[in-house]
Each structure stands twice: as C-alpha cells, then as structure tokens.
Image: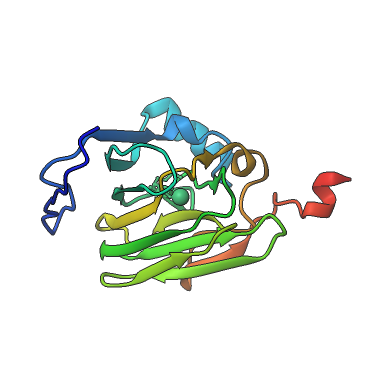
Length: 197
Ligand code: F6R
Ligand code: ZN
C-alpha cells in the first residue's frame, strides 16, 4: 500500500470526504434485536429497510503503528422512541482506544466496559471524545432534523467485536421522552454476574 502522506477535505454541512476508499451503509436489517421496541422494529422493517448510518473509510494496513480513520454519519430518526444509532462494538484488541471529533449534529456516545461500568458523553460540533481502551462505544443521533457527523481515528490492529454487544446490548439506552432525549436503563441488559450464572 502507498505510504505517502495524503490529505482529504471534509465539507460541511454534509461530512462526506472529497475522496475515500470504502463506503459502508448500515440498514435496519443489520440491527435485529438491538432496538428495545421490537414490534416497531418489525413493522418498520416490513415496510422498508431504512438506511440508519454510513461510514466513509480510508484503507490502511490493519497493523499496530497504523491509524484507521474516517467519517461516521448517523441519520436522524427513531425506531419506536429510540433514536437511530450505530451497532456499537468492543475492539477485538480490548486495550485499544479511539478518538472521535464531532463535526455536525447532536447526540451521545454510549460506552460500557466488560465489567458493566458505563458512561454516556454528549457529542456536539467541536466536541472531542476520547474512548479509552476497554470501552465499547455506540453513537446515537438525538437530533431528529439532521445527521450526526463524526471523524474517528483508532489503532490499525484494534479489530471489531460486534458479537458481545449483539448478544448483551448496552446497559443504557437513549430514548425520546416527554422530557427530551433521556438516558434510561435497558431492561434487557444482563450484568456480568447474570450472564455467567
Ligand atoms: C471504529 C469505530 C467507528 C465505527 C462507526 C460505525 O472502531 O468505532 O468507525 O465503526 O461509527 O459504527 P459500528 O462499527 O459500531 O457499526
Ligand atoms: Zn471503535
């Protein structure tokens, strides 16, 4: 792979880089079991396989020393009362961190350790979020009228573990309530003790 320095431009509003190597689209069908309101999920999916978020990636070797980077765009909307969100993941190499820089929109990063410690940090244009090693992360778009656009950067050898979150969910959910966007307990979440019982 070419190892010469390069630049790219991110035009705002929008957030799509002027060039990139890979474009990923994640639709409702890839989020089975993730949204709390499963009836709303199935009804929506029967109508259309909605595009929830997109990622524009720059390809680099997936090795220590490299930094993988790109743009994540979560579209606005809800399934039931739960805002559109990314699948979320742990890094396969748990001891690897990530930095997110919010360029546009508003939302939260929902994070959790394997031990069940949790944190939910706001994302606003200009916020820089440091996700330390060991913390699973999911971005949630709480603005119903525009995209949540973030730039991300993480170690080349991190890898992605989606399965753990797919099976256990997150401890906290971000829901639209009469009081606005609220962080609530996930009734389906199981503590590490319950999981191993
Ligand atoms: C990479 C990373 C982001 C996400 C992106 C989509 O480690 O955290 O690039 O991959 O925001 O979310 P997921 O990967 O959870 O579908
Ligand atoms: Zn990550």
